[in-house]
Image (tube, rainbow, N blue to C red; front, side, top):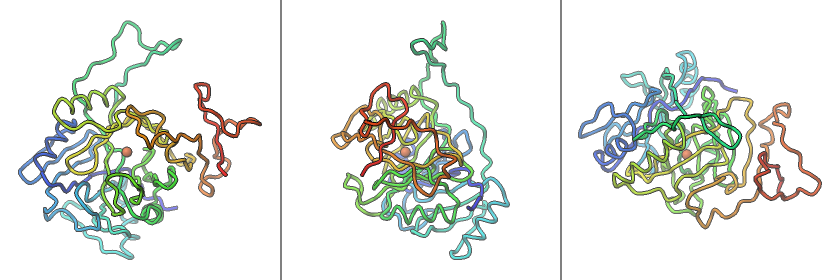
Length: 356
Ligand SMILES: [Fe+2]
């Protein structure tokens, strides 16, 4: 398995219809603005990752097979010069690679999406999450939780694209970039992690043929996840956006079962959505990928439950072929009559149920 040391997303380059409007959105969203002009905006996050906004017709926007506005190019960071050189040597076997004046390498994936690579020395980031109290578990005495007025995302955790062939798009990342499989959401999509990163996923390929609004079978940008400290920062950010007049989230606050992550998706004038994310699983090569019933994996709770969210079959299983059995986690074995256990507060560790 290839090991290149891709350590995450260095830059997302948005192509948009209205640069000023999108710049104001991300300023209100809490991204730290480095510079802006009539033609562009550049936000620099604490970890050193970058968000660039340009008009969709700007010459700097690559001409790819992506349809519509939103993120037009993802620049992946690589830990070492040696890893970057090996990666580009391999990719150069069957595609043209352009190196720009800053040393970033640009090319296209097998499914025609613009992609780039450069050295990325991530800044360490710190969080000051408050200790939490719960019955019989007191960790904060004579002390308020901290009060903040704004969200300030520190990291770019993942990017999501709608694609017509999730397996084909994923195969390129797995076989040519060394990405690891994180999880599979059956019929919906595939989660992948860069080999030098520990986010649950850095990319998700969503099946563009699903019968949901905004999906039309074509390759389109879906969303970027921006990492914040905790649920308070998510909600304070969302409340601030609402006070500034931006549209509310359709689903509201929720938590995915896949990745365990808290989420808040906000409609974004770039096209697609901007997600506040917190408390995601942190994983390495000992992670055991699973396939999930799509609805079961998608939510453990959500504020505004939608009609299509009512199916909550208690259903996931380990992916065959990816995981040596010695790495399998200690799952709670089913009892004799536990073919379809009911979710309950007692079932802290869910019992795996294999569907016929
Ligand atoms: Fe996400």
